[in-house]
Length: 520
Image 1: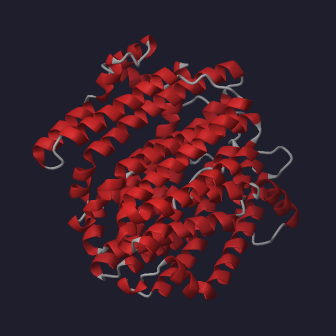
Image 2: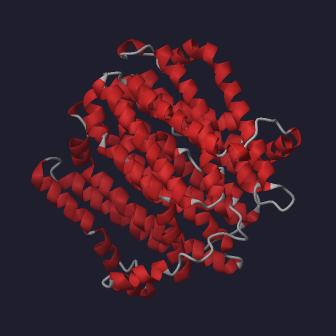
Image 3: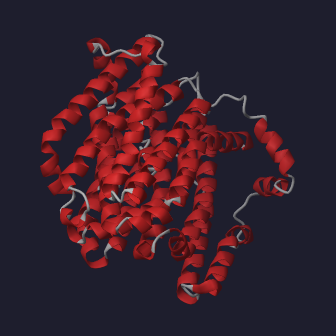
């Protein structure tokens, strides 16, 4: 058991390094961006970023998910898969962008109804976003090549250099030229386009523009059914902003989007888990052992995420004061809620893997659609009276729904003995800490910060006092007093395999949200 957990921690840290650094850079620049951007500008840019991701999922038609599977199939030529899939994505994204361009005006009216509050033309912003659709789709493909070849260093360097270039260009456009939302969009997609073109040039010998109909039919047959579930799930993170814009305005959408950005502290953990968990989970051949490992991993992962979630609830006011302009202060109201929703999403990903183990992936779609319906209805009901807090509550509720549905489906197909007693200890501990702080602790000043920080630090001690940790876990925690031994043990795991027969489990890739596209 401990070997599986160490592998999960090690591979998770390796996979998520680029995401962590890019998010740290993005958050560090929030004081600058929020000073030079109005909430309406920030809200408009974030809505279009999310719209581009949604459109890219549709335009890809599941091809990237299919590549990750077909590249490893014995009866397929990997070189042909790479060349043919590039041609397919190139033409699909190019045609998609060209078809959308004449409709930039109507799209801007639908997505940005308060265009007069923006410094730039809303139609111009949508045209930039349509160009970004091509850039994002091809960027995802080029990064997929690094992942297929397990070129982790190239993946890391390319991702970070792209983030740094985008940020540098964005700072020039937003701060130096005062381009507002237009600067955010141009900075991201212009830098991304340059990197995509360079990567295509470097890989050109492997690529092709010839549309291979036979290969495309096989890829579409596998990938296309994954698209509806992926779109439905991602819409949970897009439709709320549209409803906020229609009900409250672009400025409130900007506050909500900033709250989402701050909640990325939990996303860092989720991202590492998302990439490291499937290879580990699928590598466990024996069903009974898999059940035990799954239950323990869920418990410990929830405990870790809950600590970060507690910190976001307790310290959200000070986080916003430190990293954002005062006009964005009200965004603190949703940070705790969105952090909670992100953790629930991570638990959903655990259940996606279990469905993959059973082969019954068709249950993804009804669960995702059910959550989307709940999200839309609750946003329409809660946003007008409660503002962005209503949107946060709707997001949490929708993830509870998708999690509950997936739990019912998976328990019928592959029952897992989850450790409900330990999980309840985590929930009650976090609820007690947050409730105590909100009822009795000041919401501003040094004293409030110190007391809340102390409550945050007390979380693991409270878990220890409630008997949460097993004897084996307590022994492992005791080893942390000797970091040299821990580092040596983790280093020994680097040569261990992280997947079954070199394959990447495709069902999990369907649920990989395009977070890098939103790391600004």
